[in-house]
Image (cartoon, rainbow, N blue to C red; front, top):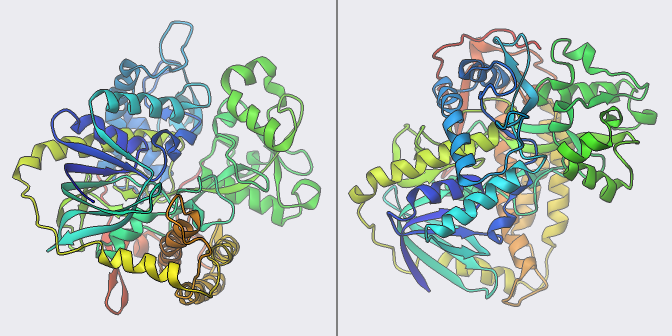
Length: 573
């Protein structure tokens, strides 16, 4: 079938929903989601949304901006950080007025708690900046925005999987989409496409990401000729449940939780004497691995403990009920009595599709791609630099999702309908037919496991040239083997065998892009730590990595970092 809407938004997480709320009621807008909308990964966000409200103690947006720039190891574009920090107060009060049930102070204002890397007076001490709804903040914001978008009458296509971008002369014309329930391939014609497809943590074996986070939007933009930005910067969250990667929110440390090694020592006092357990995520993840490498993991093994036992049952029930439940379900222990085994888990991608401050996708020469927008984790407005601070993600989604929506309304009437090419779905249909017709071949799951093992072993918290080259050789081999992948299920309805094979193309190509970007950056900055180049090198590497697909493979190039207020300086906590 062929569908036609002014604006197509792909992804029903917070960025897509916030953009939809802005455009709905003015333009004909449709939301396309690979999963049932309220199962989008934004709902997994636990700890809070950052904003210098100053409800618990003095705070200012300038301190928030400074923390964001410093947290990103000065790779953050400072014009973007200023927009984020300044607009935070409006964004949070807007959510409150929509009905988000934030926790409250005794005075009735929105409650706030400390989070990693958020400080007062430009780094002097931790500050309570995270507005929260217990430890299910993403869940309640997403539900609120979803019902607000429905109230405004948007059309929702749920369990529709994006398989191709239709571009005509560098202008977006629509999408090719696979309907999971029927196996039908549809063409969507539009004047505007917003990619809000989330991250791609599933390139790693241990991750807090959901199964749907396979980076389809990012890869399809790359395949269509868009450059990608800062793809080497992959965040590992310090506290994933050992062996599973399921997230234990940083809110646990914000409420007073402490990390302990195999000797029972609170080791972060040695790595970040000022902020201790509230240092940024990259700093703590490296500290955990240093402890493990030096034999101070629990019983000499590859994990450490998160200690919440001193917080008390009542406090845990009031502020950390969801993670307490996770610990009881997955580990069979009581966080009020038992120490929680944790290890770093792949959590967030700082890189993605480059955009300006209004969500418009930028091409190789920084030109706006007509009609194409990106917002959320799939995008790179470069507000997080080399390492994102906790609670800045939810803020990024609602601030820049709204700005994208506003820009769309501003320019929509000037955008002409671009004619679709003849049968734009033919390549996609042929790919699906090849997978279904192939009688013998390897299974996608086997290749995916090898990819995840290699990325975890050779391109995670610590990296070096030798290991990155090992991973690159593995991924190149897997990409060749992918051409012979076969599936068993040739049916039409909810064929997960087929969709997992299709997703693997995105994951393998994004793994490859991460690796070549990481090999090129010969310094250590934020989440990208090169053991063979352990120092930050501002003279040569204070610049964004850009990578673009060409007929001969890829082209790496660079663009400068926007610095407005804060000159780079040593990053200590």
